[in-house]
Image (cartoon, rainbow, N blue to C red; front, side):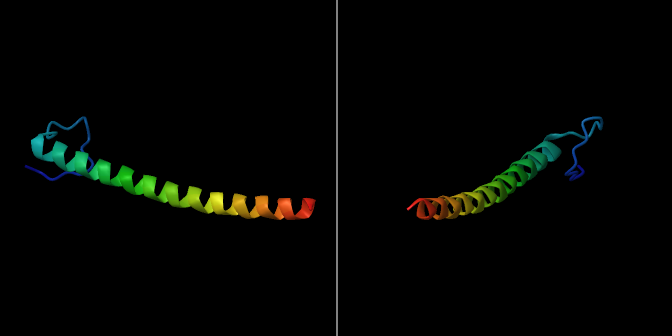
Length: 60
């Protein structure tokens, strides 16, 4: 059995080993992508809060 992380659907070797490896790899990749997205959104939120506070203080 070949440990093929790309798991091309055209290959016959989409076997149990390949599928479990790919599933774990894809889940890990998606999870890491979500973590990076959350980090980005947290930075954006902090920026927006700073801008909001600045606008509030300008109004006073």
